Length: 507
Image (cartoon, rainbow, N blue to C red):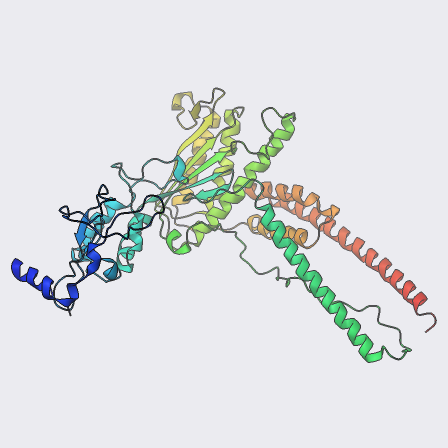
C-alpha cells in the first residue's frame, strides 16, 4: 500500500528521474485547445515552460492554463507528480489516475463542522415553486451547490435533511394545477398528440386481436364441418372473448385521492414546512370568459364557480398527500391571491373560505398560518384583506376572523379528523362516472358533468340531502340507459334470428 514518505528535495528529484513509474513522454505534448475543430492539440510543447502553467506549442502560446501535479500515490511510495490541468474543488489527477480513489478530508473533520459547511452550500431560504420568478436561494446572495448531494452516500445522508427537513417548500396552485420545484409547465390542452398516438396503437391492437380470433373461428368451422353440409345451424348467440383491457373492480383503489408530487416520496416525506400559494382565478385562463368576451354575468359567475371547485379538488388531493405522511407538519402557510378585479369584499371572503376549507382535514400541525389574503383592486393594486382595523370591521369581517380562528384551531388540534359520508361518497361517485365515460360515451351521460359539479358543492358544504338528490338523478340516467340497451339488444337479436332463418332456410 502506498504511503506518504517525506524525503529531502534532492532525493525526491533524483527518484523522479530514475524511477520507471514516473517516466512519461506525454508531458512534452501541447495542452492547447484547437479553436476551429475543437479537441486537443497534437503538437509538441516548446520550452522554456512558464512557471505553474501547462506546456504549449508556439501556436497556442497565448492560451494560459494553470498547471498542477498529480497527487495519486504510486507503488514506489511517491506521488505520480505528472503535470495535469488544475481544476478547482478536487484533487489534481492526471488522465491515467482520474478514477483513482482519494481520501476525502472533508469527512475527517467533526460532523458539527461538516453540517455548518453544508449550510453554506445549500439553500437557507424558502424554495419557490417556479425558479424563474425567484431570487437567490441564500440569504447572503451566493449560489447554491445542490450537486453536493451526489458526491457520495455519506455526504448525501448527512446533508439531505438540511435541504428538505430544514427548508420550506412552496407549492403553487394556478393555471397548470399544482406546481412545485419548477415542475414542467403543461400545455393548456395537454399532450393531445401523444394521447392520440397511444389511443391509435391501442385501437389497432384490439382490431388485430379481433381479426385473429375471427380467423381462428372460421378455420375451426372449416376443419370440423366445412367439407360436408351440417344439419345443425350455426350458433347465433356466440360471444366473442373480451380483448380489451381487464376490468378493474370498483372496490379497488383508495377512497381519498392523493397528489403525486414531482419529487420522490422519500424526499417529499422529509419536508416539514410548506408554503401554499393559491392564485385564483388563474391569469390568462382560456377556459374562463375573458374581459372582452360577450358573455352574460351569469355565465361568467358559473365559470368562476366551476373553476373555484376545481381548485378545491386540487387542494383535496394535496391534503390527501399530506395525510399519507406519517410525521405531522411543523409549519403550513396558506397565501391566497384573488385576482378578479370585479370581486367584492364579501365575494372574496366567501371564496377564501371555500379555498381554506379543504385544509381543515389536516391535524396536529405545529404552526398553521394564513399570513396574507390579497385581492386585486380596479387599479391592479393588491389590497390586503386581513389588515382591516378592528374598529372599522363589519359583522362580515368579524365572522370571517372567527372562521379563521376556528380554522387555525382545527389544524392545530391533535384530535383525528372524521371523514363525512358525503366526502367519501363523492370520490366514489367521481370514480364511477369517470369509469362509465371511459367505457362508453353516450348522449345520456352529458348531464353527469353538471351533476358532478353539484355533488362537489354538496361535498364542500357537507350537505347530505343535496348529494342524495344528485345520486338519485345519476341512478335515473343510468337505469334509463340500461333499459335502452336492453331494448336495443333485443331488437338486434330478433333481426339476427330473422336473417339467420332466411339464410339457412334450404339447409
